[in-house]
Image 1 (tube, rainbow, N blue to C red):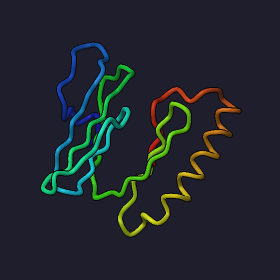
Image 2 (cartoon, one colour):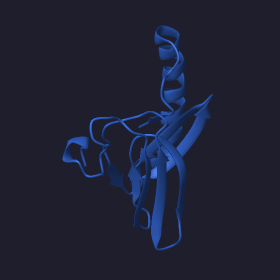
Image 3 (cartoon, rainbow, N blue to C red):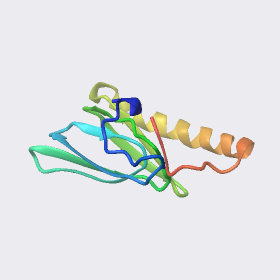
Image 4 (cartoon, helix red, strand yellow):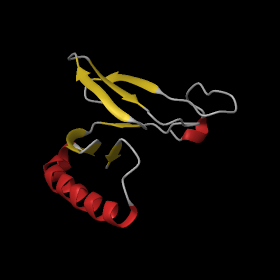
Amino acid sequence: MSAASSWHPQALNFDTLFTVKIVGPKGLFGVTSGRLQEHFSDGVTTTVVWQSRYPQDSLTLAAGYYQLQEQQLGDIQLLVLLSPQNSSLASDYLESLREYMALYQKLFGPYPYEKFAV
């Protein structure tokens, strides 16, 4: 859902921090802004929790049956969410993310967000 759809409560006239808990059927993985705090399945549902450290006025939400691979690069979460049929590509994506982050940080300075997700 796009941020413009106003799918979540919004503070009037100012940006705010968010903690978003997404609960869906087993295997459905919800993705939004912020840092991935936790994700787990109880066999019936999948729960994903995201938390923003930077004030925002709205959030976009996507969900799918993604396979998650993650790594840390300093303080930055590198996340790759791929369909099950493409999940074998996750290692290559993570390696490319590491290389591009190093290149862009040399060119533009430190990456200002808590995660980079593909």
